[in-house]
Image (tube, rainbow, N blue to C red; front, top):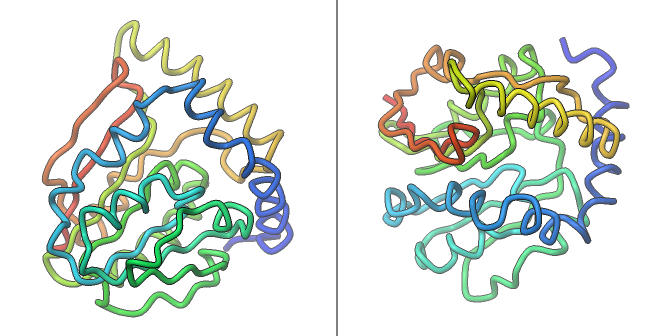
Length: 219
């Protein structure tokens, strides 16, 4: 299903390793605080979570907030880039486990996590990869557990759609050149999430509809 996946994912890991020293300042220059506001929009919904899984966390901006808002939680932070994980904040006051692994090879435990977060992560993958990955993540969430998701989106109509389309094309060209990103364009994961027993509780959009933050729950 993921033909040639091993080689492509190895290239992807190397690409994000190269970006790791520059990721934070690039985000500040290109988006200011908007991405972080999306990441933390629904953080209050998981403050009682006991076990939390962060996927594709990168340099750890959301992790730092989880440590602060969920002091009693056991946090697993998984990323395919060792250099991204190395730049994550010190979390000695928190039960945090850093896992350097390919998400497609990770053995997701069943119904273990009260909350999962994928911020600006699912946009990296092609539709068939999401159809493979989303069910595995969904099964790892306990009944009633939360999935926090932030990502880019293509507004339905009008000038905001034209603007977003241009920005997304430029973004995918840049990241494919830098990291060998599998995806060539944005795939809306909403129908795949719904097919796997998740219900959208709330959605917030920002930046003229280019960004969204979601709170999903597993039925």
